[in-house]
Image (cartoon, rainbow, N blue to C red; front, side):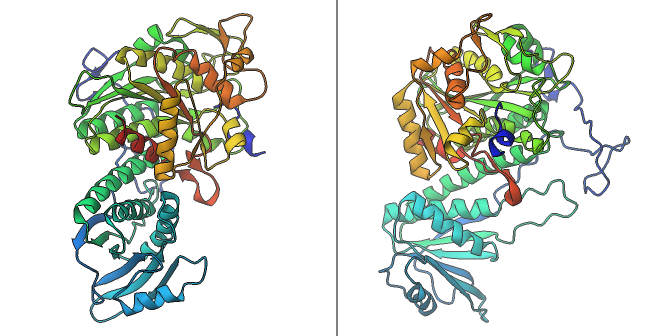
Length: 529
């Protein structure tokens, strides 16, 4: 990922001789020796023993519904979600609601009783759009983490509103309960275990909770993959995990090895050959539409499991965060699995190109010219612009599916952070209807995205004296010229590009993968016609 955060802040197929049906032929490569403080055992050579696939933490919070209003004597913690004019049949909740001053939306109190009641809280909603719901739900989720069981009363809302409230609050509860402690000696599991939604609209709320569970599952998987250490989450590990998780849900998985990549995907291979870790092309497929031959939606992900920048080496400061350069791949794999979990009535394919970008005697050099799968030659002016080199071949590979739409997801440019910051993903594409659908999905779930232009004139910044195109443009509009580069490989289908360099992970005290933009993409897939 060129101009990454650091700068911005200052084959063979399975069963065909390469891989068996049971898994990978080669042993995993572990090079870093860990101290014995880790709770996982060490092998005979003193290396940390790590599993072949990631152990996905299932949703920690169990969601359910119950007809009827919440009774004052109900055990556990009680949460009342209501409007300012709601009539509450609960003295404590009514007092809390009355105590809220202008601008306040949340109040709580602890009242331990003999019948098991632990606490009461009230959320006052002035608006019921998704942004307002998410904000209120996040505040309630912080409180809920100190409870074991939360009984949430949402009787103040009609059927559509109750479903929207339940979905937003369940997602907030599930995401707040997420923990990543696989490398720590002592795990600290979340206390919060159960949320019961009391409603007069059980059927609608149950469906909303089903969607919420799938999204939390998808975001948790995405975060687990992103947070995994780069000596664990290698390209091989990512391929193993994608295959295992997809097949567990009943989808099909195909893993293509380096021989195919080396022979057919010269641009992808030029990045991969600099590392001792083999590259893989991951293909996941699910056919849920009534017409199994209908054109699928194809999601394409950038899976650079660690990005040093290659010969165009990055600064050392915060380089550890370059393990997150595979968050596009994590998003695509996780969105695919969440869609399969929901059994969406669509045909869906996920394609992930995964490798490392390392400096070595075999690595790309500035000035190298490589040939892409499409046949276009590319002058490598900067080896830290590697994401587009692997994506262009993955996007060409996607042509064979005759797709209805192709959406690629990548932590592609630090320039996107300069343009949009850390809260908004960049969207570009060659089909306005597709871009509009993605922007609508972003609004539906408040997973923010913004369209950047992709005018033909930006191609003037991509000129090479020695090849068809260079892998970087002249200075200015770095996010757009990166997408413009990809546009040369997407002329045969409707295409959109999501640059998530600013939104895929957080730094500082909250460092870790965010699971974005899984909410946006899952909502888009739920509304595909």
